[in-house]
Image 1 (cartoon, rainbow, N blue to C red):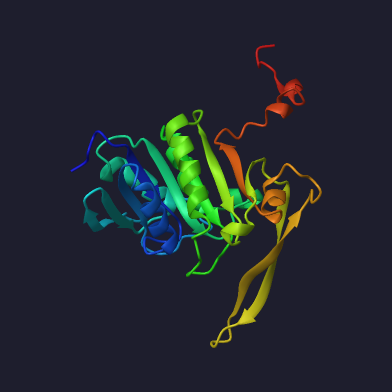
Image 2: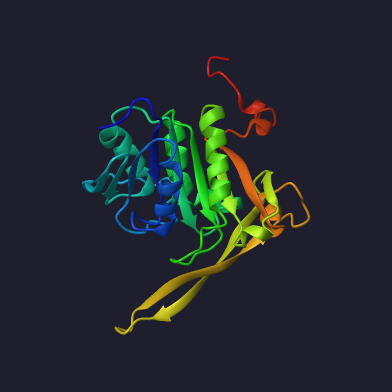
Length: 262
């Protein structure tokens, strides 16, 4: 049963309910409130804000301890948040955290990230949220250095909140704790992924393609970006908004305005 005197913390990820990053995150935040986690039943990286509309969704409880409940869902990370907020939680959570992702979600990766898709979905539903990532893709990634930074940022947001329709994109460098220089609040780097598709042939002599590529940083000398912070051994914290309006363009295209009655 939920303790209404403690914060209710909702947790999700995109690496799956079995991921070590999720276990570490639950371990950190469960000290501060009751945890309900809904995570994908398998890895769903790169799902962005995808939702399932043509298949039934299933929610299966896999852990029910005092203060911690964990469910797996056959949907995307955003499905997990939508279904979790609708069916798994007794009230609107006080805060939502997503991750800790195995791999970077800095710069333009934020728009592809299932981790950040889940965090953004929470803030769209009126729940303050944070997405956490560690720059280590390995399944057995070492989160020991990240723990203190994740906890401090979580505590700050839990105590101070965030503006409506915003979330934080937090990326931690893959370094020993002694080599991390601190935290930098910064902006998203302007850049893009340059994809390559390797053409291969399967045993049945059918062609297929395997996605590879590299990140192209358009501003490598800028010192106020998340990529600079990470390259210089800082934890990068970028505030993200769900409003996609390009306000600086509104005046530029104002001549498109017209009334058909004129």
